[in-house]
Amino acid sequence: MTPAPAVAGRSGAAGPYTVALVSEHASPLAVLGGVDAGGQNVHVAHLAAALADRGHQVVVYTRRDSPDLPARVPLRPGVEVRHVTAGPPRHVPKDELLPYMEEFGRFLVREWQQALAPPDIVHSHFWMSGVASLVATRELGLPLAHTYHALGTVKRRHQMAADTSPADRIALETAVGERCDRVIATCRDEVAELTAMGVPAHRASVVPCGVDPAHFSPFGPVAPRGPLRHRLLQIGRLVRRKGAGVSVAALAAMPNAELVIAGGPPLSELAHDPEVVRLRALAREVGVSERVRFLGGVPRERVPALLRGADVVLCPADYEPFGIVPLEAMGCGTPVVATAVGGQLDTVADPGTGRLVPPGDPAALASAVTGLLGDPARRAACGAAGRRRVLTRYGWDRVAAATEKVYLDVLASRPAVATTVG
Image (cartoon, rainbow, N blue to C red; front, side, top):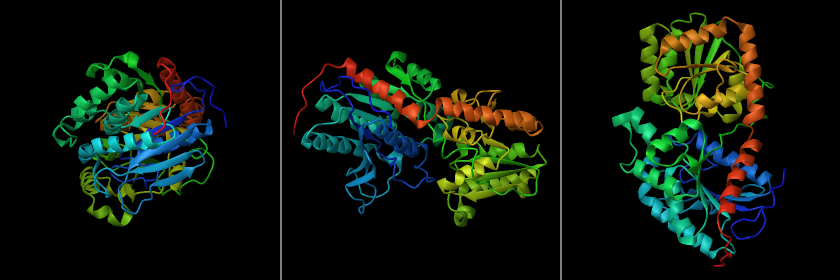
């Protein structure tokens, strides 16, 4: 464990610090693969653990979505999950949670007023967590860092009428960016989007998402292959914007390859999933239905074996705020072909670790993949370069150190105040 540096912070005391991570809909305890459970859950869980490894005490605040959840759950040494009562104690789709954010924020006020000492810094994740955290931090005078994970401007641009976000999401996102002490953006593209929203670039620091290179590594079990020469893999939530339709259409130009699609509901429920129904119809239309296989939701422990067993991993999303899958594939030494959007512009180095292609273009995707499939030496070189890139840039220890540096910058820029005991 690398100890946190001793730097005078909000209370005038030297670190390590108490850190409150606020993640209103994405609990680090959640089972992944649901509509509202994905990369943010992983990010918060690993960031909390890595900050604890650096000596900090971390509490993750997330909304109670079941009456049976205990108030506090130890996640690991140095990390506790605190379930916040805000709204009904049941699952509520994240786009319907905004009315409960004032209540969430008032809970935080009471919690921190009654504590022996409030947190040294609050770090909110996703825009609604930012709204709730502003309620508490502005009343109590606490420093706030914020990570968006996704921006409403990007979602609305791509989903248009299908966007179910609250009507005032973008205005509230802008307010969070203007009123927090620092935005922690996950990629350079996000900073550009924030600037267009009116949040000055100097208010943002770029710290990428991370990956566990011990779990996602080239070493370990490999998923068994089918009879075809090549295997392509797409893994993630089964929603239209992830671009699985582009992968299916591109497969028509690659007769010696199979496409494995992992994600969505359990295998037994796939037949009733609207996106699977759409993709199967498309596969029949382009003549590849015998070469497309759906696995359904896959336990996280099985994901590395799937990634190792693929020749190329496809990440053809229409837009991607960051994109964890390319990092996981690169960690396993598998080349990636991804769309040149969002965070993938930062993570995938073309031509070093894979290829970047325009979104929504099956011909471009097929051309890039075919080039790699036809050159085993280039494929191996991309895989090795991807692994090196993960080790040198995207391990959670590095992400936590960079996040900690932002915290220290924020704390150093604020006048020291006396700790209030509730």
